[in-house]
Image (cartoon, rainbow, N blue to C red; front, side, top):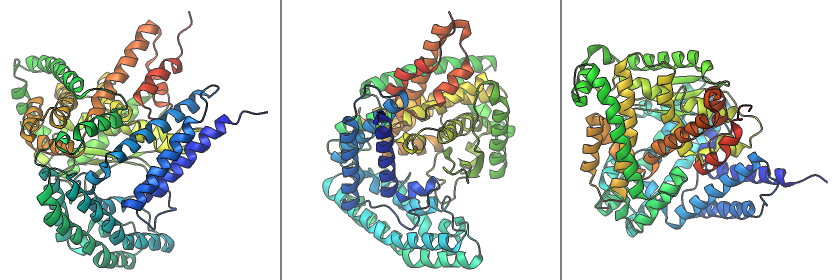
Length: 560
């Protein structure tokens, strides 16, 4: 009689992932799954109840599966299901959904302009599904408005800076002529008449819903904002921040310890920066060296296309060098695009979107060309190696291309693997130095600035959300760490809105580096970096505790 447990674990993960996609149709679209392209999600009470039922049911079924006899992959899948459901239920208990109703980073006003980049509308059938999705938008936004009102009534609101940035985004969207709307211009249509149909639905359905939402958050929500930027000032905020730390890092670590690690890392990185500064005859004045680097005419892109072209070049160089450091490379390519104009003022320097699950679309690396003089070419290098190759594009594309893993592991692992994913991105910035990708000491210095920036995130995120720092104190710390005025403000406001997410980078990187040192010490001269990277990336994004438990067994010890 065959053991049914492997099928049980895989079947459970398949049911769970199918439930997630049905609850979040736009997530399905992002991965190339067109089954729900005619609808949007349900952010209101009914959708929340469905989500909670899915998490409770999956958690109970996972707990009922005996661990004895499970394979490594089955054990990992079971771990990930448990962690994902426990955290989502804890967030639901604390009504974290109310905070997401107003958001300048990924709020409801950005949903359609973003999804149009991924949804195919090149056939009559696909066009009709997209039109139906646009017509569903007023219903969707009405449910969001219910969350806005509930948040305002219960004190579960965002701080003023988050609300003001969201208001500004909506104002820019509504001021844009219909024909220039990112929904209209971004649609990949088959004909001009199809684009005109989309424009008409945007005029009839989308614009009025956005205008109603803007009026609500101006008149009802804005007067009810939290007086302080930190999550500690929200109802049950200190406990909610601890939940968010576990959600993003998958480890239980106190905010005070996060703060201490960040300060320690900042000090170590500053010593590295000083060595470069001294060699360039600036002594220990790293700020003076940074200013000189930023003012070099050759370091400032002359146009947005210059910045985009340089990113293309850096990706090409990384791909050419990668076979010496990886045994397996992604099949999917990586495109480079500028951040859309309507949100560039609130967006980070760069970010990445994964390829479609069916292989029909490459990964997309977005580069922000806003405030071009601050977007130096030296800073672009480490950013590209983090976001594209060998960073996020390698890790995420390889995860999606790994055969034998259930869909939840290939596509949904970032529900519990953010620290792994962002840790790999930050590790890749250092790895790029080992690969010889930095052209000069200026790019190396900019890489160290980027490392210091992620260390500073530990300090300011814990500072604001637990230690009662002000927004200005965060900005000042980021400036001292090496960020530009523009980035220090944008990043601070991102951390205000997204508590805990900023911790993933350094926490994940430090764990990957610790595991590498552990295996280097075990294997000595026989340590194989290519095997280490292939093992690290060969099982998808994982909770850090799972990674620490399993990785040493995946990298074989050398023969005695």
